[in-house]
Length: 102
Image (cartoon, rainbow, N blue to C red; front, side):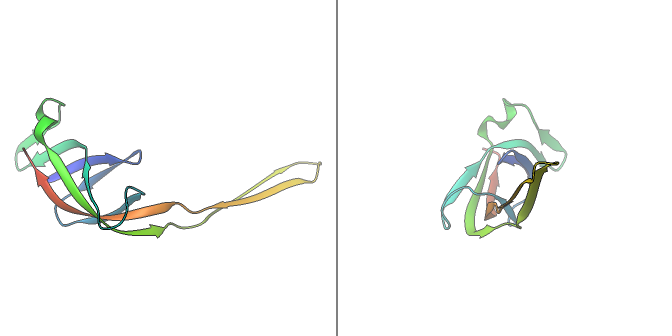
């Protein structure tokens, strides 16, 4: 059984016991419930909002880390105008603890 969840503007295929890194959710050691978009259990596929009304995907936030650094540089030609910037996204490592059909 696996589910497709949506968090942080991205979609992930998850199964029970899997760990993945998503955009920051909550404090470490807390439980979160994620909204499923699709549930596949053997031959049955649940995808409509009416079918997914009772489905829940529970996860535990294991850790919080910083992602890779993104360096940026902008400039305007012939005016000596230059700007360097950087960004590191904070990510949460979550572990899927359960997928229930309701």
